[in-house]
Amino acid sequence: MRRNGARRRVREALREELRSHTSAPGLDVVIAARRAAFDAPASELRASLHRALAGLLGRTS
Image 1 (spheres, helix red, strand yellow):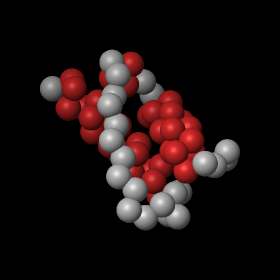
Image 2: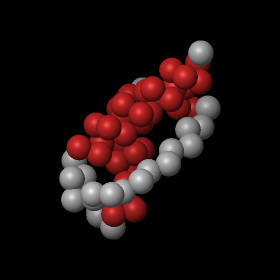
Image 3: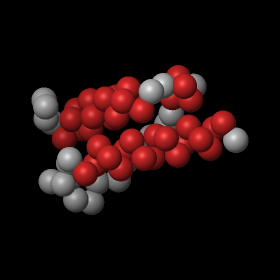
Image 4: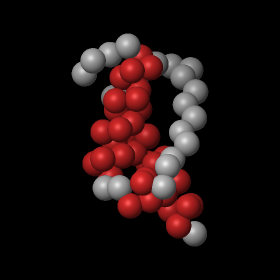
């Protein structure tokens, strides 16, 4: 049950973050959440995903 909750939290954070990356159509993203994601605040999950996507898309913002 706890793992599914973490998966839902990460998925929602990813949806929120992808909204700001509309210039990346067709991008497939695979996320492997670590144990720290179970208890991490939503803001921390979004910040981590933002950094990862910015790196993938070659952006610094």
